Length: 146
Image (cartoon, rainbow, N blue to C red; front, top):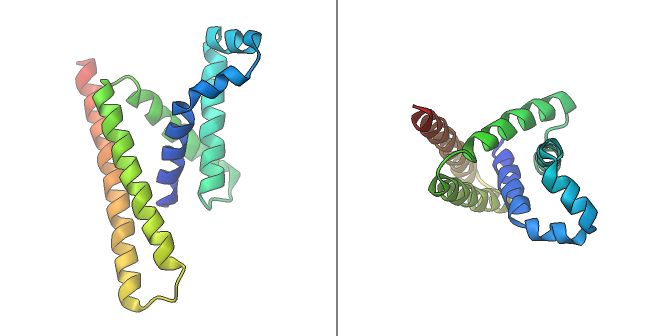
C-alpha cells in the first residue's frame, strides 16, 4: 500500500472540515442535501474517490474504487466512535502527512543508498502508524458495540 493514500485520507478529512463552503450553494440545494442521507453519503464517497485518485499514483480504476470503498467504510466506522478517537485519527494522519512531505523532499534530490534506507524506514513508519490507527478504530468500534 502506498503512503500517499494516507495523504488522501487527510485531504478527505480537511474537505469535510470545510463544510462551511456548502453555503455557496443555493438554499434549496443545501436543504436537499441536508434532508437526503443517500446524497450526503454519495457525495462523501465521491470526495473520497477523487482524493484517492488524485493524490495517490494509482492508475487502475478498479483498484481505486476498491480502496475508496474500503477507506470510506473505515471512515464511516470511525465516525461512530467517541469524538476523541477522531481527534486522534486526524492527528496521526496529519503526522503521517508531514512525514510524507519529508519523504517527497528526500526523493527530489540525488540521494545516496543511506538516504534510500532512511526513506524506506520513514515509509514503514507511516504505514505502521496507519495500520495502528486502523486497528485502534476497529477495536474501539467493536468495544463500543459490546
